[in-house]
Length: 67
Image (cartoon, rainbow, N blue to C red; front, side, top):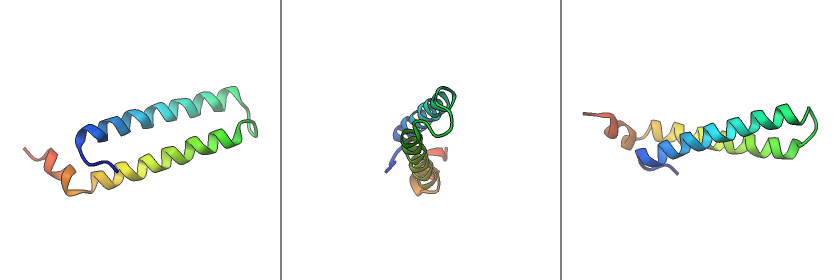
């Protein structure tokens, strides 16, 4: 669970890395190949999207953007 802006930034970086990895896998392994690996990466991406959304809607996020 993301609890501060630093963890949020790390999660964004991890999300970007996972998306790039998935793109590489999709290019190098056609449909049907490495299916479990791609599915696992998609699950990690979905989990990170959920965590980022929860943090964005939290009081901590609103408090860190208020001047």
